[in-house]
Image 1 (cartoon, rainbow, N blue to C red):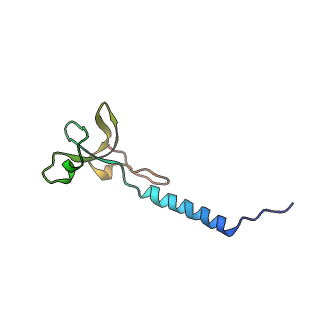
Image 2: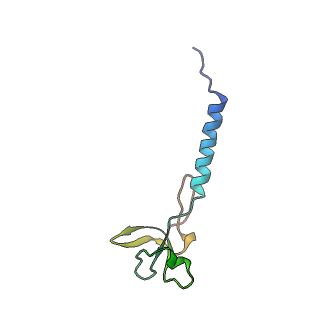
Image 3: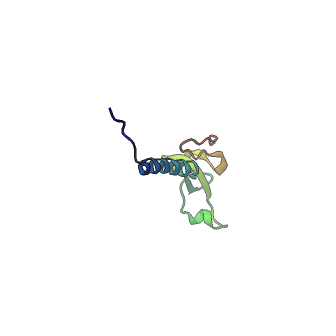
Length: 91
């Protein structure tokens, strides 16, 4: 029975794909949205971009009944997720 040999290009492309997946997923940023800091309702992005705006960026979390929860206003407190990455939970 003859062994089947993989072409070197197949091996290289497969390895490059895994490397790209690891780099992009581990280095990805958490979801960011502009919200009212009191009500946590979503606001237009210019409310967070202007120094006089009334919004703050909220990272992670999910939307339920029109408001966001489960995330944090502190970017470093939110796990960005991804393959092989570790982080802390938001709050």
